[in-house]
Image 1 (tube, rainbow, N blue to C red):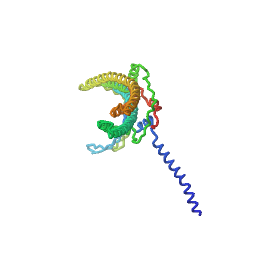
Image 2: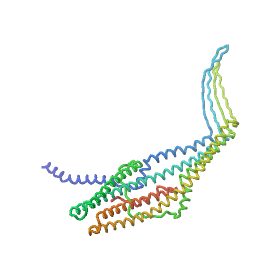
Image 3: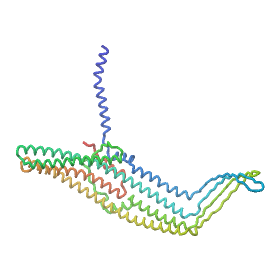
Image 4: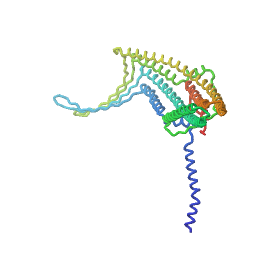
Length: 446
């Protein structure tokens, strides 16, 4: 009887336990598939992306140029020791042992090439800063583009699936109407042709989605990311400042690519100074101290110290210095011309990016209106088809126009966001904080 009660209690308890376990498992599953927003994806990218890791390593290596260059102006200290046995060919045919330890200290007092190399190293560090800043901006752009390319591909696939289902229904209606003699066979064939085209587009959309996800995986390392989607009420904001030349001015002041070109020009000029400095004398202070002991019949210890100024003056190097100066001068001229070209490209990129934002705003508005118009047209066409004034071909075309407008409208909204970030990147002011306003309009997909 006691055993029966235990079994009965277990039977009554088991459903509750299973319910709790299943609920807990479901909660874990829901939490596991929570959609990621843009900032979360960017955080993954900043930790995983190989390009930013390479840029960070290059930056760490580049900033060591400065302490390396500074080391030439600091004392150089070294110690040396030697020991040997020598033989003397004399009447006594003797050999002796000689042990010596030498400490040397040198300090550069005047060296023009080293000074130019120090300035070159400072410019190199600034160039490394600009390169790394540009790579961080590039990572923001690549992450954003990959994120919205996935959303774009998902939307295209959704629209193509919806279009395929709608056309399939139209095909079925055309077949039924043909069977009762209401429409000619051409309507059935047109419906079949439209269905085949929609089926092919769905296959292409599936492939595009897989490619977009692969590109996102390359940046984040996560192939199972579920992404939040863009809310319908995303505001369309004109560039601020409103004048295009104000953005160009920002670019000429802040563009990382332009800063890299400026530092490259400075580095090339300092290279000319370094090569020209090879014509000047160098002055070093040198100190030597040695302790030696000699074993020959009797042990002899000797201590010596020396402090001297050493002046070196190159007189003739076979034309090497002149050739190096000419080479550095030509490279400096090339870098200066490259800087001018980069300034022009920076202005062009900024103007193009500005126009891209303005055009994308107008395009989103136009496509929003087009979407509304195509939907009304599709409804009117369907009503006309039911009334017998429109053909099934007209209905199919209206459906395709509607789904095409939906796809174009969604794509235009993503282009607006990407163009807005491209403008800030062209101006050199793009930062992680610029992702926050976008993040506020990302919502869980329904």
